[in-house]
Image (cartoon, rainbow, N blue to C red; front, side):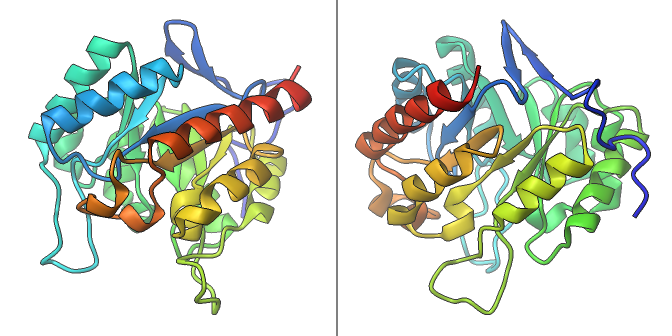
Length: 268
């Protein structure tokens, strides 16, 4: 592996500027939260209002949902992106959402503040190149079967097109362990920060697949990572996707309180 564009440089650590004084970098623990899937306009507005009260500035939400089964809910598409944008504008939130087709990158440009490339598309090289040619930050999730080298090389594909505003996201990998949905590889966070100058965040929702583990693993990850992206829902048991790994509103508030304590202790 030869990193040329994102290799570590302590004098040039990347800070992702989202505007309005909001940045994702190594000086703070950034929190990103929201539902796995956009289900309705009312749902997204209610979530956005709640996040705004918690002072969470970035909302995630899936409008395009690549699912293992073709019969599972596939998302609302651009209608869902419109709901996210409306909620973001109303409550002054930045929006991150996954784009799965290179042909949709340009159309999605005005709806999202951060493009997300999901685990299944980490090596969709056409998508990486198309988003690399854009001017929006990119959240690049590690593939579920990807080595750290393959993950960082995917980031190089994006940077090679001119966009180095990349946020790396460790979201768990497949191992022989079956108690959790994936194995959250916190070693990868340390390695990625050692090899690259990019901020690295953690997804404990997909990394564990178990609601009761999200807060403990978030607290653990917060010591090392530059941010967290978690799934939450008002009524997780009624969610159309990933309810089993989503926090409810009370749990989300508890998470915010716990992470603030850690942030106050280790960031300066």
